[in-house]
Image (cartoon, rainbow, N blue to C red; front, top):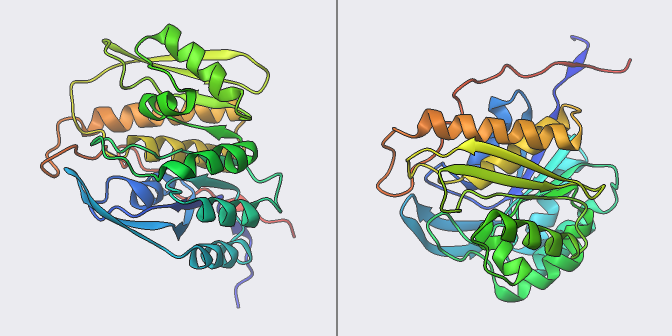
Length: 280
């Protein structure tokens, strides 16, 4: 029998389904794999959707989600966790209960409330549960402008308003916030990172003419989790994650997949699985 000498950095994604393959748990697993990490998953919901929108959402029972997480944690303990679609207060409670035993486990939370298509994906009463329970355990949350507007209870149409909104969201008990500015009406894409030490880091990228951005938020948060799993610092993971999604959008911008908002190109530069030496 061969001795086991190495392992892979692993990322657990706790998220919803996307049968069209561009968002949700499918996008997460593609991203994690493309960045050289090993992907495990726990399914939270089954949205019936394609690139044009969401038809309906079927919930996975909370105890089933909890058991999925338990089974992964006891067998392939992750180096980082990405949390996506969490659509009921009971589900929030279940996930927090399972993860709160591991305070040193890096957690990236993408507060999925509004799909690229504009469809609302979350029950209103869940937002309070997310803020009170999930925000405090996440190392970084990654809202888009629609989600940030809900959380900050304000319109966000400029970079200055992004700064105000980001500070308001930090006051909700977040460790750090990456506020994505992809929906701003401007020729460049500006994102702001509100770090744990109070600094605001600005990231700017050119904006491409494309509607192939389905699952871009899922992809970005999974990329950040993948870089954290590789041992990068939080700021470095946030920076590298944005570089990855920017390139994924660029390399997928002219592709025709589906009749609506098409996917990004997760595999524009796939990496081999990273080998980490095991302690003997």
